Image 1 (cartoon, rainbow, N blue to C red):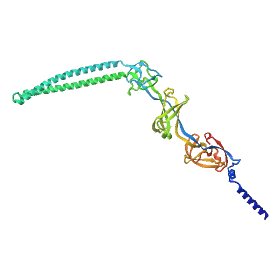
Image 2 (cartoon, rainbow, N blue to C red):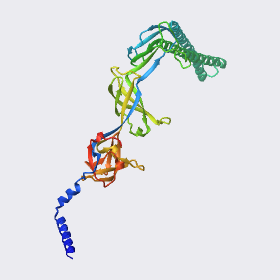
Image 3 (spheres, rainbow, N blue to C red):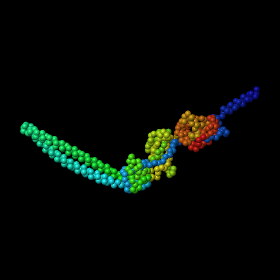
Image 4 (cartoon, one colour):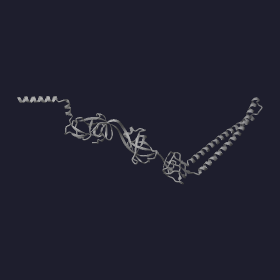
Length: 410
């Protein structure tokens, strides 16, 4: 009996001592991490500026390039440029010799003079016809007036003859006016022919359609040059001209990033062979996704005023598809993405007492090493970044803090 009384007293004493322990001491006891707790790599949820880039590769091409053809056939009399020469708009590149065109001009000029002489002769004829018509018409009017005042004085036959002469004279005048119109038309036609020949003669000067660089020379002095028409595909160009002070890059933008492309977007263009970067901007795009590659051709213009860049060089373009400023982030290695929804995931957080907790989070922008966290975490919370397969919620661990940018994939 005495033994039972003693046990009861000990139990009451233990309860009393436990009640006397301060709340602070209890909290400290809970926060103490057991010495045998597993050490895990961890990172702190923190704010960063994020951007997702797509690196696209293309080669520079001239802004415009053309094979300069001759408009007329002839022999190359003079070649004024060579490969590598910079030419301005309208500058003469070559001269073609066509002696028979001078004869064509002389012939057309003579035809004009002949037509103008015919016009002069027809105008004289008109003056004669007008005089004859005036006399015939006046005679008929006088006879008609006499018949009105004194009927029977003049024979009807005489009146009819006067009327006939009047009509003939009028017809002759009309015919002369028609001949004048035809002569004037002939003058216009011959002048147009002369203008055409002079225009063709002007084509003997092969000029630059735009400012650029001569990248290839096809002909030499004395070469026979064919007119560059659609029906003569064997025609040889004179030179090839490229506009190199502004270059193009045609980038194949993936279908998923097509909605993010807009004209005027600034880009950084890296040229590995020069180990330099140049500014560029989106100038135009095809607005159509190619079925074979699921990409859209997007053209980037790159200014090249010093001609440092050469067409054919390869370039890499950092195409920024999305960006977030001051976004809460965690390492990619800390997140298990949901198989049903890629915008949600799960992380293991570490409390101040070293206890693991499974947490569902909402994900946003993903880069190579970080995830944007839209909800589910608070800034400063610790998340496990490795060996999550062997860990369980409620387990005590000892965190080893790593920088968020240094975290690696599991």
